Length: 432
Image 1 (cartoon, helix red, strand yellow):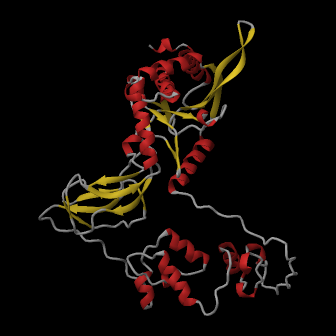
Image 2 (cartoon, rainbow, N blue to C red):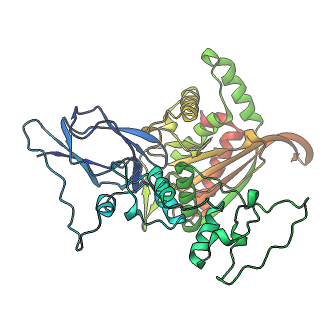
Image 3 (cartoon, rainbow, N blue to C red):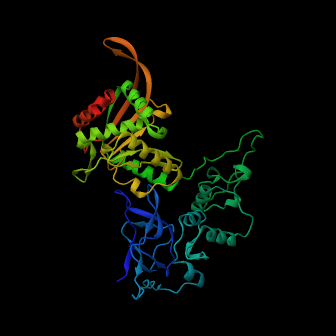
């Protein structure tokens, strides 16, 4: 029986993936374990290996498709097995014309669909050059319909004109080079009054620029919006004397092999992991009316990249020495910048640290990274005047903010964890 190829789940909260590229064509021989396709999730682009050896057949997913996790997208037939065929397409009730019969059942790319909607084009009338309707196909169709000079207009103006039944060619545009803007489209088809002369020095009205975002940024926005609107956050804030933390980093850095750099994030990762071992409720998560304990302590580190925010994980951080954590962190940061992170680097995070102190931020409130119970926001270390034995003194202070999911942890448990963590920061010997 042929082996099914499904869209895999590459993360705990993943519902779907995007098929970026088939690495094998339908009808080709594949070997179990060799790369079969590239898939994009909300965190990373990964290569998925073939689950069996045989002939790739019955491919139903096209590159660029968003596919639910677990859906069958192809099959691999072993040698000697009969190759399955795709189910025949349903017969239409009425026979369409030749152009519609070729393209009406074809899928279209998201960009092609958007352009078609902006210009009022029925995709069923677009002739596709390949197996799906592309942006180029739609643009060629639009050009073939043009009977005169093209009117310069913004996409919003075109949509409004179409909805209101207004001929764009009849409008006087106020945009650059006479382009018709949304404000130039009247509310009805009544005659448009002649535009008043514009002073020579008056700047032309310009619509706000829309900046496209990457898929990573879109998913990040959706996940954090969901967290912010569905997770009941509460926050604990403490100022911490970082004097001994600074000394500890200096000692470790001086003895590090090969000039390895020890950062404050490395030290906080170790201390947070030890505190989570003492207070496991902060290492749990809420799941549909239940609190689920994680068997491992895996600390995620928030890393900013051009396309969004990544949170790769230092696994079993409580069992690692600070030098090992530093090596893991340096590797994760380097591969995040080059796009070399894998799905394993993101799997199983149970707690997150976000450090903006290196950017001069004094303090901030971080949004809980679902499905985790808490995230630690780290501000910069700066000299401040504090009371020491009743007298003013200058000390290097750092502000920490603990954001918690109130469904998984209450204020007392969070405060106990926080106090243990801060106690080890101010006296690192407690960690040893």
